[in-house]
Amino acid sequence: MVAKTKISSWFLYILLVVVALVCLVPFYSMIITSTHSNSEIARELLLLPGDQLADNYNRLVASVNIWRGFANTVFITVTSTIINVYFAALAGYGFSKYNFRFKNALFLFVLGTMMIPGQLGIIGFYKLMDTLHMLNTYWPLLLQSLYNAFGIFLMRQFADNSVPTEIIESARVDGYGELQIFHRIILSLMGPALATLAIFSFIGKWNDFLTPMIVLFDGDLQTLPVMIASVKSQFSSDFGAQYVGIVISVVPLLIFFSIMSKKIISGVAAGAVKG
Image 1 (cartoon, rainbow, N blue to C red):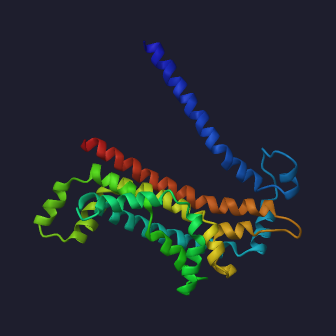
Image 2 (image 1 turned 45 degrees about the horizontal axis):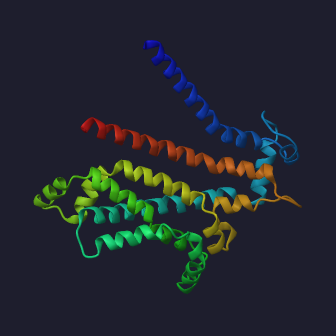
Image 3 (image 1 turned 120 degrees about the vertical axis):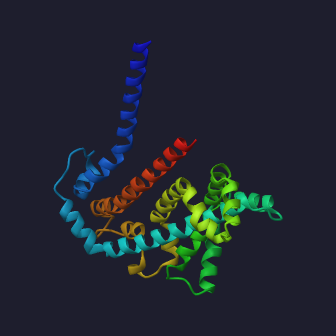
C-alpha cells in the first residue's frame, strides 16, 4: 500500500513537472528569440541565446515610442481594472442580496449578453463615441469597463455562497448605510473573487488591440499591442524588435498575476480554516 502511494506521488510530481515545462516553453522561446536577428528568426529553431538583444531594442526604440506606450497601457489597464472590478462587485452584490422587480429577468438579460461577440457592436460603439466627441481620447477604453457580464455573474455566485445575509442585517442594525456595508464589509469578504476578476480584466485590457487601434489616432496615445504590431523594417516586419517589445509587455502581466494569485490562495485558505 505504501509502495503504491509513493508511485502515485512520483507520477503526480512528474506530471506536474511536465505541465510546468510545457507552460514555460513559450516564455523561454520568446526571450531567446528576442536576442536573435531577423534572418536567424526566420531561418531556424532557436534554443540558445543570441547577441542581438541590444540591436533589437535600439531598433524598437527608434521605430516607436515604446515607453510612452508602456505608460499609456499601464494607466488604461489599471484604471479600467479598478472600474471593472468595482462595478461588477456592486452589481453582483445587488443581484445576490437585494430583491426587486424583474430581478431574475434582468440577470438573465445580463447573462444573454455574454453570447454576443463584442466585435459585433464595434461600429455602433465607434459612432456613439464620435457623437460624444470622445474619439482619440481614453474615455472609450475606460467606459467599456463599466459593464462586464462575466464579472457580474462571478460576483453574484460568490456573494450567494460566501457573504452571509446575517452580517448585512447586523450592520444595518448597527446603523451602517448600504454603501458603507458594501465598502467596509462586502468588499473584504469578496477578496478572492475580486482578485480573480482583476486578473481576467487586467490581462484582457492589457492585451486589447482592436479598440485602441480604432478609437485612437494619435501615435503617442496608442497602447503597447498596437505599437508593437506597427514595428517594421524597411520592407517587412522587424521580428527581432517586435519580440523585444513582447518581452517588455509580458513582464507586468507576470508580476500582476503572481500578486493576485497569492491573494486568491490566501483567501481560499482562510475560508477553508473558517469552514
